[in-house]
Length: 91
Length: 159
Image 1 (cartoon, rainbow over the protein chains, first blue to last red):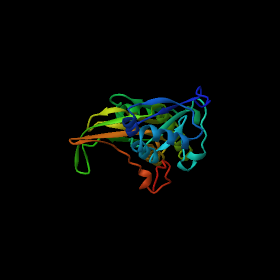
Image 2: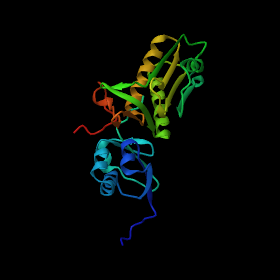
Image 3: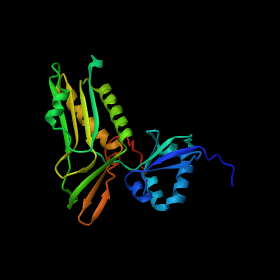
Image 4: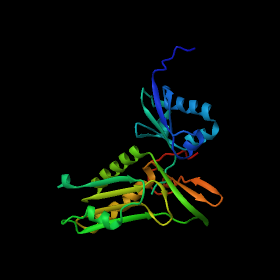
C-alpha cells in the first residue's frame, strides 16, 4: 500500500457520450497531479472508448475551459470539479 | 445608463416563454429596436427522420458561459436588455429549444448582437443535443468551430 494521501479528492463530471460510457453522471476520485494523469486513470478504468471521447473533448476545471495544449501542465488540487466537455451541440 | 441594463439568462425544463413574452421583458422606451432569434427542433437530419430530441446541459457552467457571452456582447455593441433562454431535456419536434432577444436604440446593434450570441452559444455553451431516429440515437457534436471561419475555441482534437 502506497502512502498516498487519499483524503484529497476531485469530483469528475460526465456528460452526453461520456456519461453513457461510464454509466455515471459524476464520481469522486483520488487527486491526480495533472489532467494528463487523470486521462490515464480514466483510460485504465473505462477503456479506449472513453479515451476517444476525452481526446475529442475539453476539460473544464471549476467551470473554466482548459485548452488542449495545456492539459499536461495543468495541476489539480483538492476538491476541484473536473468536467469532461465533449464537442457541444446546444442551440 | 449601463447599470440599468437587464440580463435574463435561464435554463428551462419544459416549454420556453413565447417571443412576445421575451420582447416584453427586454422592451425599453429608449430602445427603437428589439431583435429576436428562435431556434426550433427539426424533424430531419441528412434525410433521416428525427423522432425526438433531448438536450443535456452542465447547468451552472452553461449559465456562467452565457453570462460571459452577454458581457462580451455588451462590450462590442451598444445594446440595452438581453435575454437568452435555453430548454433542456426532451424538446418535441417543432418547439423552441433556444430563444434570444436584445433591445437597442438602433436596429443594427440588436441584430448583430443576436447573431453573435447564438453563434457563440453554439460553439462554447456546454449543452448537448441527442437525436433519436427510427434505428438508434446519436449525440450531436456540431463543433462549428471546425467549419466556421473563426477562432476554434472549443478545441477538440483536429488530428
